[in-house]
Image 1 (cartoon, rainbow, N blue to C red):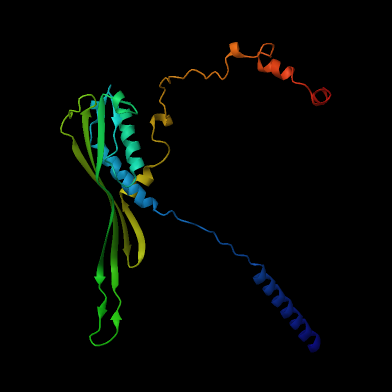
Image 2 (image 1 turned 90 degrees about the horizontal axis):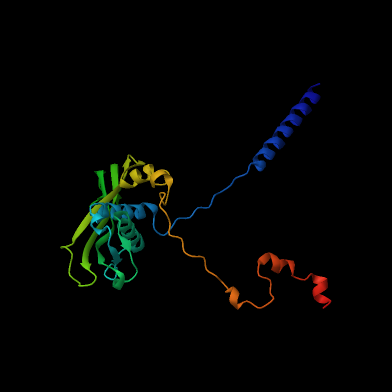
Length: 258
């Protein structure tokens, strides 16, 4: 009886061991590969938001009704394409008409960059690292609370002049704007974020156009369709319509039996 009981116990233990091993071996794991762009999204939004803010201080409505040429030969900055595209958008919003050459323009708009970029500041409350006199030992720093702040700056200058006479239309000016992103840590816990970037990301829901429309119900001046071939130059006796051309196309047996 005792022998049978011992065998039953060992049998159950062996079965439990096999079950555990099978369960452990059957557990799978997966990994996800991620990658980042060379420039962080935070940096790019800091700069683009600073450019938007700088242009929001300028009255572009004075360009309404004029043919405007934007001369960017003196503009050299980070994210120049976004800056130029935003400037073009402002001219469109004002009611101005963009042209591609100075000789077709009434007004030349000349932008320049006084500084477009980012800076970083770090600060903390705690005890700095301390070295022990006479010993190659250094006590590590202790941060109770810390903050990393990244700022975006855009200083943009604008001047207009008459395209025909070259005379300045006003004295021009500069517009400067600042954006920031704060990452705060308390006893190593964080980041707790605040600033311009998180505001932009939280509000960026859907398209910013009126009612989601990109054209807004405006009438488009459609171009005349391009005529590939003049019918007067067509070969005499050839089918005049695509349907007739397809109808007169020979089948494969007819083609090879010619």
